Image (cartoon, rainbow, N blue to C red; front, side, top):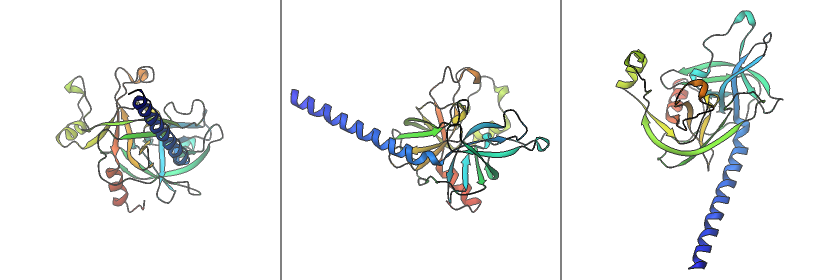
Length: 254
């Protein structure tokens, strides 16, 4: 009996070690594809403002992020430009980009990157991934306070659920919310904790690195200001099928 328990313990330890090694390899592989999204203001202080995360796809010149991460407008008098921050640490560089496609319904945006291509991530198929599967996402949860250092979180797909935003009072309901209630689409709910800077991060398969979805929101328990101190641990991601549809609608190869 004792030998059987020892054998099972060794087996579990071997599996965990192998699983961790797989994820380590995948993180190292996808990190060059993870970028910051924000605004570059040549005359500003600070010059660079990070608003979220993005990831590279296709031929290495297309970047995916959330629609809500992209600025509504740029101040031409300040020479502001849409920017993608590439690299890591304090040596990250600024690359110009332009928004070429958006989907407000699915909170997605596609940018075209100027300059040389970057390593790209592969998209998974349109099929929903079953609940209980392991996932990870890599991004910038607290922005660029300490420099551009990508952070990886992991967890499982906890549920496949309609996208409904809870409100305390019916007066808080917008027309957009009412339309969504009538025809909600399914999204992934995760047990991993994301933060505002993670918006736009690729949610990927821990074993293959294929993009399963795009992180787009975290359920906030109290206030937005308290999300870092008291995270809910409930995160949502848009299934990759909606990203594929947006790419195909705009004739973008991936």
